Image (cartoon, rainbow, N blue to C red):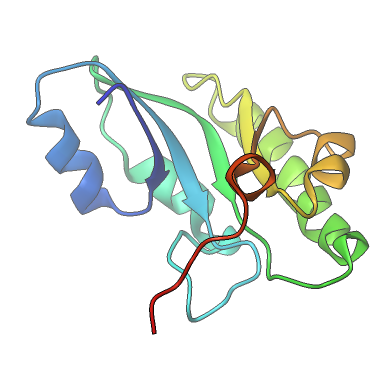
Length: 135
């Protein structure tokens, strides 16, 4: 493991330190505040970053978010804008973390995510096709 894009709890942060290996992490933000998704709520991100111990092994590089799905990708824009603003605010408050990465946007809305500041996108369906689900 060299990177984890779903850091969503202090418990996971502490568990990662036990591997005694450098790991880059992205804090998962539940930007849509959906009950069906994990992640730190936007209002709790500052508190979460404040609670992390200084670690020579865990490198907090930025944030990851998946907004609520909507058929029209344009409806994701406000969530991407909110993430970009949150990133800028946290960069000012936590200069000890680079927080340069912003992983957001998937196959159906990645163009808008890039327009709003995404540095990483997830386009698995665009490459591999739709997932096959077993019934």
